[in-house]
Length: 400
Ligand code: V47
Ligand code: SF4
Image (cartoon, rainbow, N blue to C red; front, top):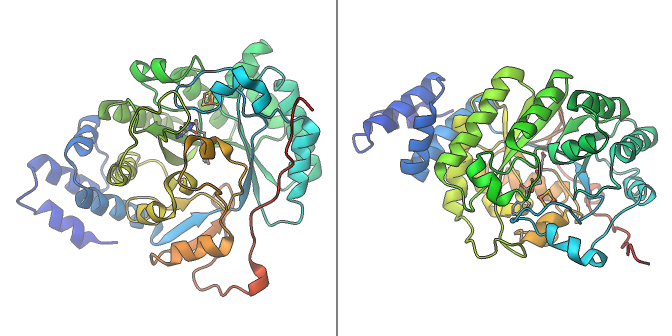
């Protein structure tokens, strides 16, 4: 942890007084205000922000960099909603181009990972009426019956709001049912940008910010953990990002149930916002750093490497990030379709470990709840130990 680097900022005469004051606060472990958050977005240069964010990162985690071994299942890539940034919604008009997996097909995917050292299944996709409370409860039950120790991280308030409303049950009742069926935790999707000025323009009629936050709150009250995201770098302004971070920080103060914050860089391929230019790598790193500084009550900041690419993911580890999403397979089509950096986002454990070690950090495999499983810092790989994290998926034609 580099106190000296932060002291240098505090004494730097070329920095404005407010920026020096923020550096002092970070060194003292004090929380920054919304106004200061906005100032960081508007005035904080990359080196300054990186120094502060890295200080906070190393204070909490040293060089430890977490990853997990998971696989993704997207039950469908067709969606009723019309989020302008998403390449899924356009498929509702060309339904035959998409997929709609049945329970059996989803279980086939789960079974394909039998014997593979994965600890988590991440389930999220489009919203369609046949995927309702009964369907998902049965799915979670079947997964747990088949592989009880597999952590089910599934669905977001976007789906939960829709399916509970359809069944006319309260959020409280619905989340209780999901827990009983086998839900272990909730991923962070669907948050986008909370501020209505932006949300109303991009989120295609799905759940509101209040509903998103409320469902997470209820889940936390039931003892569950979850993640949070922010889709940034499109039509929002810095003040909207600060508002988003503030809403998350407030809820976290109340419940403590969030594990990790995942900034998601807007990608502009094949969606209604293709005309919007993407953020630069410098802006991405600044955003990671400010997220780390602002969210002083979040333990972890995650970089989702399939979206930003391996190089930027490595760099992010010096800008507040302490977690790189797991070794995954090519089923995360939501990103491939939106123009992610990685066309085939599969990375073996060896590759991921080497990527982390190459920037002098310590790779730690974790489970979903951040219990450390294996420290790979000095691990020597045997040739046949490489886990590919890649499984061929059945190609399903719903019209066949
Ligand atoms: O909510 C959709 C985003 C999210 C685009 O919790 C896009 O561990 C960029 O939340 N450009 C879903 N992003 C994915 C998600 C996630 C991913 C990895 C790990 C975890 C976790 C959660 O994907 C959506 C939306 O914000 N998204 N389209 C796009 N064009
Ligand atoms: Fe549907 Fe989610 Fe895409 Fe919106 S972001 S269109 S809710 S899949």
